[in-house]
Structures are given as C-alpha cells and as structure tokens.
Length: 228
Length: 52
Length: 242
Image 1 (cartoon, rainbow over the protein chains, first blue to last red):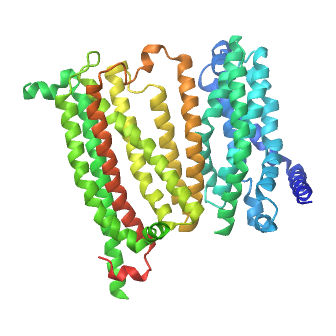
Image 2 (cartoon, chains in turn red, brown, cyan):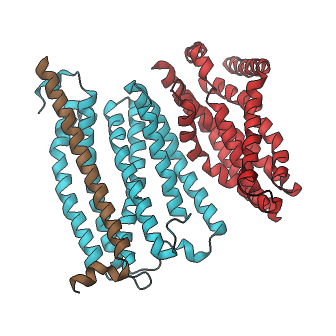
Image 3 (cartoon, each protein chain N blue to C red):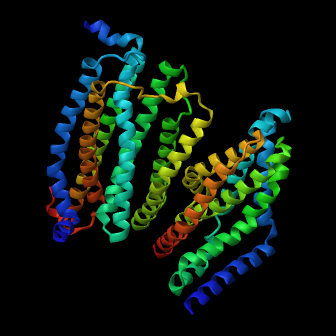
C-alpha cells in the first residue's frame, strides 16, 4: 500500500511541475536561448572556419549545455521552500528522496531534454559531422540527467542563499568535470571514426551511481535547509 | 660542497629556493593564523566573562 | 569506551586536552621538517636527469599527499558530525579546511614551479596537477558554502553533506582526469616525479610527510581550540577557562 502511495505522490509532483511550467513557458525557453547564445560566442571569439571549429565542437556544445543547465537549476526548489510545500513534504512521511527525484525529473524534461534535442543543430553550426550526432545525443542525455541530480543536491544545499546561483555553479561544476571529460571525449571519438562505447559506458555508470545515491543526499540537504 | 655551490642548486636556484620558500611561508602563515585566531577568541571570551 | 568517546566530545574537556596535546605535535613537527629539509637539500644526491631541481619533489609530493589526506579527514569528521550529531566533529571539519586548502595551493604552486625547468612551461595539464586543481575547487566550494550561512548549525550540516558528496566524487574525478591525460600526452610528459629512482632518494620525502602530518596535528589542535571558543561563546564553562 505504501509503495503505491509513494509512486502516486511522485507522479503527482512530476505532472504538477510540468503543468506549472507550461504556464510559464518563457522560463523554460530561457536556458535554451542561453545555450544557443553561448555556443555562438565561440566562433565569434575564435574563428568562423568550420574545419577549425570542428575540433572543439563537441567540447563547446558540452560546456554550453553544462552552463545552461546550471543556470536553470538554482530555482529548482526555491518556490516550494518559500511557500511551505517543502516543509509539508518533509513532514509527510513519504520517502522524501522519491518526491525530490520526481521534481528533478520534471526539471530535466523541461530544461535538459530540450538542450539534448537542440544539440545536433548547435553542433552542426560548429562543424560537428553527422556521424557524431549519435554520440553527442547519447552523451548529453546521460550527462544532463546526471547533472540534474547533482544540481539538485547543490540547489537543496543552497536554497535561500543570496546570489545562490554563483555558489551553486561553484559547488557543482567540479563534480561535473568527469561528465564533461567523458562526454566530450565520446563525441571526439565518434568524429575520429572510433567507437564511443567506452566513455558512454562510463557516463552510464556515473549516471546510475548518481541516481542511486543522489536522492539520499538531496533529501538530507533539503531537511537541513528546511529545518534550520 | 662549498656554500656557493649549495645556493646555486646546479643552476636551478630560483626554482628550488622559491619552492622551499613558499613551503616555509605557507607553514608560517598557517602557524600564525592558528595562534592569532585562538588568541582572539580567548580575548573575547575573557572579556565576555569579565563583564558578566 | 563510549564513555571516553563522549567525554572527548565534550567541548571543555576537548579544549583542555587539545591544549596539552598541541606542543607534543608542534615541536616534533618543527624538528622533523627541518631534518627533512636538510636531508633533501644537502644530504640527498642530485638526480641524474633533473639535477638539483629534483629536490622540489621533497616539498611538492608531501603537500599533495596532505591535501588529499586532509580532505578525507575533513569528510570523515563531517560525516561523524552529521550522523552522530557531535558538534565537535563539525568544528574539526571546519578547522581542517583552510589547512587542507593551503597544502593544495602549495602542491599546485610547487608543481607549477617544478614544471618550468622540466617541461619549459609554467603550467601543464597533467593528471596530478589537474586533479590538485579540482581538489582546490572542492575545498574553496566547501569554505564558500560554510561562509554563506549565518546559522552555524545549517552551515555545519550543509557543508557536511557537501564534503561527503565531494569525497565520494574524488576517486571518480581522479580516474577521469587520469584517463583524460593518457589520451593526448606523449609518454615523456606523464613522468612527472617518479621515474625509477633509488629508495635512498625517497627518505627525505617520507620524513617530510611525517613532519607535515605532525604539523597538521599541531595546526588543527590550535584551530579547533579557537573554533570551540567561538562556538561555546555563551557557555558557563568558559568563565574558568584559561
């Protein structure tokens, strides 16, 4: 009986967040626009020559996705903490980790997933060849999902902190560096004609590790933020 | 080995002495910071109990 | 045994014990570090390939070791504080952080300085230096998080979660950076500090590590005393404290 109640609650959270976001469409679009803008900075800063840009295209797309995701993560828990919903959740007796994971999942659907879908377009603009699209999308799928959970931990820790988004980035970016290394390397290998399976598998492993331990850390962090 | 040879460090004097110097500096700074912090807190604690 | 543990965790008792303990760390630390310095600069022979520049190893490697060691100590103290709600453990983590960050900075600086005579550049993205740099970011993030809260309890507990998350990530970061460097670097560059050298040349290194460890014992004792005083500001036992 408990199990069904938790799943139902998590489902509700997931759908409620998606519905809320639908009404504030511009908030969802902003990270996406930021993504494209940041990507544009690189050719402007270096060279319009696609053959040169191609070399760093995988890395640039990945970095832009990282930064855009982090920007959107700061407000993940803010409104729920401010209006008292979070306190209700902590007291509710439902496993907090699941509810938070549902929130993170809906956030990823709204911010991470659009980035992933846009990535071939953005990558092509930097000279990324078609052969590397698969590796790009796969690595970003795993990477943005992992980042959402990591960012969720950071957001839970920094709820209510003044200028929390800078602090959040400072905390999460070092933890995200392995993702960046493996993700952009997967793209690079695909561009060279090698199989990107190795780094993709490592990304998957990190994702599953984060998925299993992340909610624990998030609920501990939320409890600390709400109870203090 | 005479003293000049020693200071020259086989031509790498700048690198070696800067490194060891930085080490000494970091250790000294941590030493003085720890002592100063403790003394500050002791002073304020003493002052506080004095006014009670 | 638990009685001893709980007694130690009581602030006034810990304050006294640390005060008595500190000189027993401090003086041996000084002696050991001086011994290691003399051994490293005078007694040990210069390296066949790197000449006297090799002597930088004797401060670089122990700093790197301490930077990692202290982070683990910090994370363990934070976990103990979080799980068993022992404020002293949180204080110990707070006291350790700046010391660890200093050693990380030192490892980076000496590593960078060593790089110039070795590879001709002031910085190189090799596995050891890059990992140390990321570790510095972790330390700085920890200290930044701590200082962003006015409520000391929230500061303690939030930074404890961060330290635990960080320490779990450290092996992952380390491995990924290693992997990343082997992709592009030719073999000659990855041999930063330990080519096949005689064991006698490593003695000063081990002695310096012991010296740094003793130094850490001294430094954290003094800092922890300061932390205790600050946290126990309004407690009555302070009135009789020395």
